[in-house]
Image 1 (cartoon, rainbow, N blue to C red):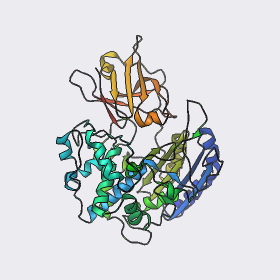
Image 2 (cartoon, rainbow, N blue to C red; image 1 turned 90 degrees about the vertical axis):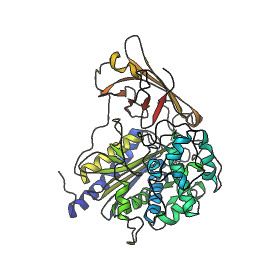
Image 3 (tube, helix red, strand yellow; image 1 turned 60 degrees about the vertical axis):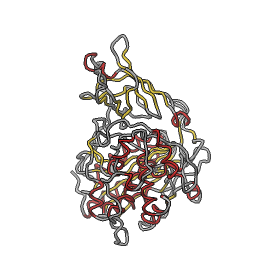
Image 4 (cartoon, rainbow, N blue to C red; image 1 turned 180 degrees about the vertical axis):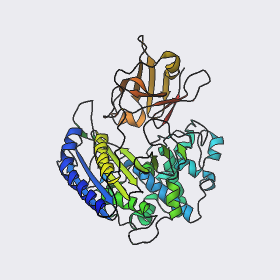
Length: 473
């Protein structure tokens, strides 16, 4: 097992850098990713690499200083801004959200009175989370966004389980605005980006345009070449959840470095308290067995032992994907940003190399359907059959005459507007009660779980990281 201290760690990082510069162009070609940039830090040292193009329409080459959208990795930025308020004694995580936002309402008034900031941070608030309504480009967009939530349904009791919730982070962004008296973007820049020296970071297209900036790419049909997306970003009202923020990977590592340094910035000043740093990576809720993390903290996703503790976050926006992983026991972090294609393949190979060379262990293999997997037996899995829905998709699970289970998902709302393709696949047993699709989606076989009981012996939720509720028997 390689050592990761002192000179050995520096040599290991140099080796990772050389491998990245050699391997990344070919890896992008194999994964049909137009462009990417990667940065890895070990201690105070950083190595970087970039390859491909920022847009297939312009052919502009990607560089290590190019900006890519980081999507939902933004949520850890939002969580850090929230924890700064906790440090100052201005926010109680376990008080109802209405203590700060008395206007906060959802369809379930009883739940609205009880939901806390802690539950929003850990994705356990329980209301429908994929609400991407555009409320304008003005500084009042988050204030207006809260009005959009009035009819949003409650899926389960607050604190009852995990279900990824974008809307909850928009509410957190509004909490930051109200307690600071400034727009969310201003709070992020003055309290995080500037103190951490993040000079290549853009909160909106107006800031991004002065940098070398990537455009997202999507496929109009399976197997088609990636094409630039017709729009660059989602609505500003979702900025606190990850709709707009873009940066180079080195800047993302500057943010991670602060968390590795116990909340200290590059000048030694305190950006977040050591207690706040540790609280953010403390487990709040265990995740279903669907090959994501093992638990969720206050913003961070927590991963099981892989030669030590790993925490991080992924981000996906319109045709762009980002990955951040932090290994505090080895003082290592890696940031990967891409603009389309099978980005998960790029992440898996790069992260595997970093873990092996600098983290002392190889990562687990990604989930794949077992060869000759038996069809799920009727007595055990007929509870899964039915239709499940959210604001972004409707998913039907059915059983055919031969006893095989099939999943068909139809995009709704914003995902349909963005030409998201329908998805159909057979489901087979992965492990335990978790099923796995035979056909990959964007190169990934993402396991799914069926949880709860609707009172008639059927699963109440189809869980893919989000809990989609059953809408038919």
